[in-house]
Image: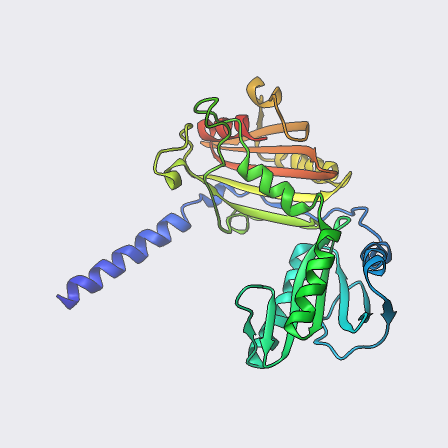
Length: 324
């Protein structure tokens, strides 16, 4: 019996490896793109947040004993009335999240626990910390607040409206939750059957400089066949940039693929999409063997969006036609 169980585990491991690594190495994209974007001035980003806080509280700049992050572009520490807080500006979500994770790790080492209701607040006895990355004017601000739980909750609830509005995360959210796949006018739009996962590294895609990025696989089977369009195993990566920077990324990706991939025509149902959320600027398509790559550049909510699809020709074209 033990041998049978061991054999089953080995088989599952082999099948899992085959599934993860089944991308043909001959179909690598070999993309290395790191654009020079016009990012927001960190001082202006700080000023935006501080101006809002100053309307709500008596603001005082001062050195504060906080768990301090590193590698930030600009910082402010001080008090809003008696609540101690720090603001730390980062260029991208990745860099902000990295600093966030380090602080959370430190809080866990101090035996802090998450607040029962407010999931960004960590407490120990009567002391609490609020840690969060918020999108402000095309940058990210890591906010660290220290005080009693009641004091922090009041402060956080007051400043939360300061970062309502467009953000790179919302660009990705609407990309994945809105599509032109309709079953009926009653049910309306369908979200795309998407699961996050790292695939770009396997095909030698190294694209940087983005504010926010999500990558994964689109497959109708994730919805047990309920998605109205049959799409199988299409890799998808979404990159969000400051306005004007997506063009450089698109052109450099296009030029790199031209060297070793065959450029093919983009179907009209892709280039002439209606009810588009933003503004579709341009899309291009390349083919090698049975693999097609679609690259799309659009503008959305004041940001540039670059999408890369990778998979078999039939399914890539179907997915490209319903993106919004």
